[in-house]
Length: 161
Image 1 (cartoon, helix red, strand yellow):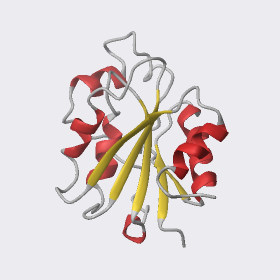
Image 2: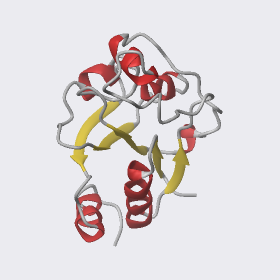
Image 3: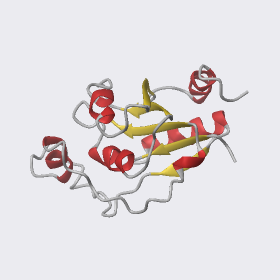
Image 4: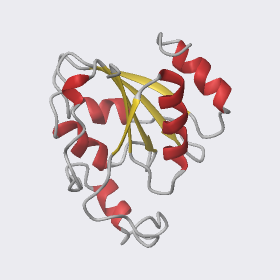
């Protein structure tokens, strides 16, 4: 089994496509982080202060329930974790994922998709959800990157051909 896992949350499919490219480039296993209650278009309406995602972004302590907890992270040394940027950070379901497992001694490489913002407070917000022995690296925003460029980025970490 591969020592690399690509775990991702994708509300609209954009992050999922980038995760698949990374997994193929790295020869990694792929795991989708799914909420117990899927997000609807109304939930994702960032213009509405009443949308589910707006409320979650306003309360960084909120942890959406995960649909499952069978990622088997103990089998991996390196985990790429991907998500869309919401309000200049990771959606809180990523915190739910990180808090559901023991990532001690592991390396987490972040990647994200965004319509224009950078990682913002992602690393800072996510470090609160793992042990001090977990290394979290800010990766790249992959929204407009072509597959060959993503594969070259993955090789920078020593994965892939």
